[in-house]
Image (cartoon, rainbow, N blue to C red; front, side):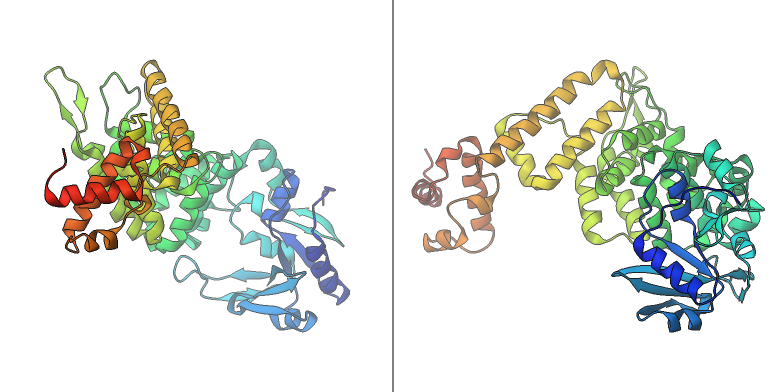
Length: 450
């Protein structure tokens, strides 16, 4: 036993007291204990007890059967759910996720033995205090992610633990224990048995961590070839160009690290140059070029993200950013309006953030001018939006119905006319008046535009 102060929410304390008052043992386990020790306020609480699921259900007025087969009941207190799981030990896993059998036990120590990492295998009871059977506090102080027991066995039980290992390293800023890292290399192929949804969830958490560049560990440990295989070639693709100081893979990791903490933005940063290995060419001076890599990157990204079962809206936004990431940002009003129309307002500013992160991962001797232009383009866009200057057909003071009244045919003829009128308004927003646009539409219809 070690005396440490563990943060316990009002709801969690009530669940613990209810179980203890009924004669059962009850502990907060997992991330809540770890976070408390690290001075982080826990976001949720998991509770372990020797009470059986039916006994837990009898003690609380509101419960949800979230995992009865594996001993878990969600107890709702103060409108917050707390997962309450019976102390257990497990047999072999049948699908790299669920054990084929679960045996309930009476002691918390046996329950903690089945957990993944030492930093997640600590427990706290209001009655018995703090319990650390596997050196979790020591590993927190040493900033190490270490498996409980045999690393290889832990990963064979649930292959997703390999990805979780990297996720915790990224989120906590820890290193991975040498034994665990070697075990990931041995077991990497087992990640193929894990569902795409579970893999995507872990990748998202890594990307939203303070150290998203730790995704490099996927390459280092061999997991990348089974999860994001096209990225592997990037780490052996040199760029031999004065604008770059890293190979493609290193540049991608630096770009991800530079990008603000936004999931769409960081996915775009991760995949923006993934098509470069397939597009590399060399000129007469030995300089490498990657013509059309944005299109190849879009194609690969679309395939990968669909395989990971990402939602369609997110895929769309990521692909728009990848498509435009290498466009040299012209800060002229007309150019900014055209890009706003192409991407939409929200994605426009994310594109500027992506371009900034991208350039920051290049040769610093050549980035100041580009970053300055990106900043100016952002300021210009803010001015355009604030002043309500039109940049899309829908913002014109004339529409397709007006053109039909003037004799235009529905379809392409109307579309071409509206785009023609928009071009004029982009250059001079003062021309966006109904009177002027109808006059110009009549002239366009007659073919007299001088």
